[in-house]
Image 1 (cartoon, chains in turn green, cyan):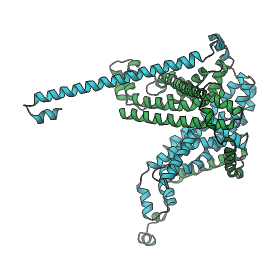
Image 2 (cartoon, one colour):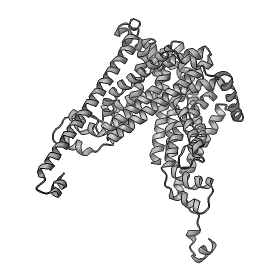
Image 3 (cartoon, rainbow over the protein chains, first blue to last red):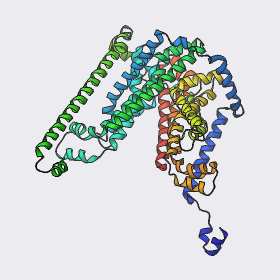
Image 4 (cartoon, each protein chain N blue to C red):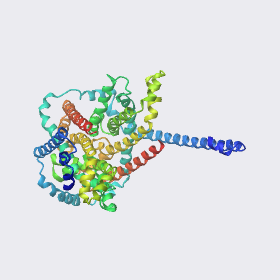
Length: 280
Length: 286
């Protein structure tokens, strides 16, 4: 090192190399500082006992061992519970399906390049998709339960809105990234909006839409396991009942069954998406 | 097809057309079969949908309780309106929700360091043990809903923001670790080899060769997860973990429907804020 720097007398080479030069490095440090301040402030504000955090791991183990072990597997093996599982799957299925049906027009209106009117329809569709996404599925479930009463219909509706919010964003992004050539060609020959959509856009996004649909179903199933917690049918209702009765061993068994089901659904969805990708 | 006819010459034109005809038949049969398959599949799907609609919507629903469309509209109408008196009580819970999301994301990031390290195929220390372990961690974290996590942590550490922070931290591990591990698996391998060649330790390899390559992606994923975590922390109060969810729960239980709408609007505003921040940060990064 020394010899080479002596051989070439260039002061610039002795300067320490940095990835970011003056203004950028300042922004970087500023961002770190802000993040650090926010974290320290929130620890202070929320009274998080940092010293007790590590001890909590041991306590967690104790509680798991004492209350949640052994899980009451027999309890979830009966016919009743199986019926609830089927209900949950149906709810997720229907919610995702209806959500996807709503998604198609919403994503069409909310994609900047294909929307019929950038001034009116575009912001409305964007707002609709965003508010579906912003309000958590459990809040939708609570609202629908309070309007329609207990049962699976509010669950299906809550999951519909949830799936719409989830899929509309992904699908709109997919539409925004299409090749505009076919679209312009069709417009030049005088095709109307609907024809452009069906023959110019849809063939380009068909495969992506199928992938999104499968993924939406997967996510909707995960959400469906808990919408019942607030009275919307399915496994969540079972879970709530046992939580309220402090039957912790049964709760553990139910949670295990949820994990197993989610893993199965994830495997199916991964496999299905692979098949779809191959068809491309 | 063209080259085939050219090479086989004039005398075998007849056989080639026969071959082509055979091929065309084969294609036609295959097409027919795939069309039948997809037809059967759509019929199956349709039957499944009709059955589900019958069970969930028609049989399970208590239509008498819902009554006519008017009753439903009336029930919906109760929610339209804003309770201005609630405004002053919303700031503290809103701030709490935001901070729970920040802190939960931070702790989730810390927890995901081992998960991402063990879960990336190319840098995992001992493949047969650590790789499945990390995958299990990610799957557990992602498959259990935040409400269930929150219930569990409320049982462990008691009511309050702490349970919410831990639930969110555990819940975010899966997504952050999975994306990070995938980013690590896709890195350019030459810097790693260069650092190894000059005798760098495993830690130095990670710090100087891997981290700079994946840092922008990690930050982008973390900001994205933070945005989702705001949404999550807004409802954790429903099971006793502090924040806006608790206010929502109280308004709902006291049948103050205008208050419910107000809380939802407050949640929307916070989420819009988070989305704007996340949009700008990620646009700057990419």
